[in-house]
Length: 342
Ligand code: FA5
Image 1 (cartoon, rainbow, N blue to C red):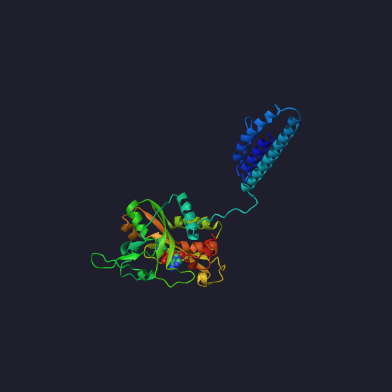
Image 2 (cartoon, rainbow, N blue to C red):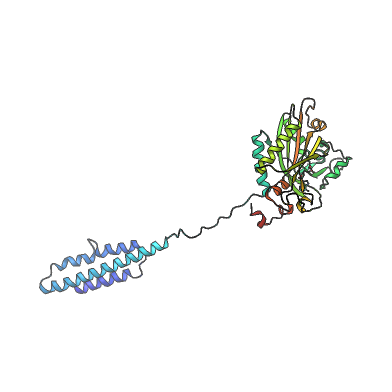
């Protein structure tokens, strides 16, 4: 019987060798030490032995059982510990940084303005960047021979019309959407039109060839310049959240009468003069005026009943002034060191 006990002990020790799984361990325990286990069965048989044999074999069997029990407990603890260390989470470690995209500062001010104008009952419209000469100039009271065309030199596109003329341009401003909107919606009308515009321009700290504007248009009965001034004030208050120093002077645009220019005191230099404001202390930001009757006519609106105002906000320059960006070229640079700051 002693030999049989030794054989089972060796069998158990061999089965436990290199064990890594708690369930396998439980299976071995059951197989040998369970109620019907092989070691348990032998231990039961010890009771049938007689005299000294029973004493000696009994002691040997009990020692073996204790030894195996201790070994099993040791292994259980080791397995528990290794599993605990595998699933341990150190909550004091810094988290993994999740990279998120960011909005360009122009998009940020655009979104803020869209919300503001929506709250005043304006709709948000879009227009084509590749525009016809008709909407970009003609319908805005700027015929082909008009000297005002020189104010906005653009990129003409190599597409000819049926008469063999080049009549497609990259739009120089968002104003072409004025007549498009009038033709589509009629009067009364309140809309703003954010978008990209293009000019063949000498580039410097405040002039880009590709920049953003936001057109504003309000047409109704009895609209006056007082309505325009009120909306301009709301616009600046909404973006800057405080009074900013501005000046208004007369401005000439063939599609408004009268026309005004609203300039903002340069927030970069505080009005002392710097490259961002062409050393003048002021930046042209928001030209505007009362819609010219001829433009209303192009839009199919009766100028005897309706009047309206329009403005053409320089959105990129507004973002410069709001965030203290001293060079407009940064916006299109694609430089992440700049873009990641917003
Ligand atoms: C216009 O584009 C007119 N369409 C604005 C308008 C609309 C007047 C409705 C009256 C009624 P202007 O060329 O001044 O106007 O441009 C408007 C604004 O765009 C400027 O005040 C300025 O803030 C911005 N802007 C003009 N040129 C550039 C440029 N090259 N780079 C960056 N911003 C510019």
